[in-house]
Figure (cartoon, rainbow over the protein chains, first blue to last red):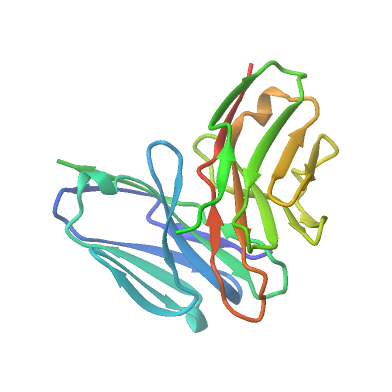
Length: 110
Length: 116
């Protein structure tokens, strides 16, 4: 089945720094979403982005479907950005489910 | 914005007991899912449900698990005889009916199940 790898696995930043998180997938996808898992375990939807670029405040995301990757940019990071970031993809093979990536654990220091 | 609602938020159960986790998907969605996340690990697919039947299930979803849509609004996951290794966060999700149009999935806040 499709493999979804995220990098880096762990990231520590000072408050105010910028970062780029990457999601690579091994096969074509119909859909892709980025989630932030907060300290309470909730999955917060950040972007639905099967292709193209979107921005929401300090966060933006780009998916290049033909090259099988997506990037999540966090600018001017804040301590509340801490948590685990997951990308999830729906394979184009016709199976209707999301496959989650391995996650990036982000810690932002004050 | 419409939400997927899960109850309870946290459940503690004795090993061997049956548990039922409940979800209320978004009202006009027709595809429903359960996912599981063991502490510190990634989120794993358990089962998808469409048109009142299972459309796909993973290897994790063995005979101890079952799903049901008992009425027009609820979607439940039952674990018949819980084991210690069933301790995890369980997420319900739903998605829109029109597969011809790209869509996103909406996830609930999760139920943290602790088996003791």
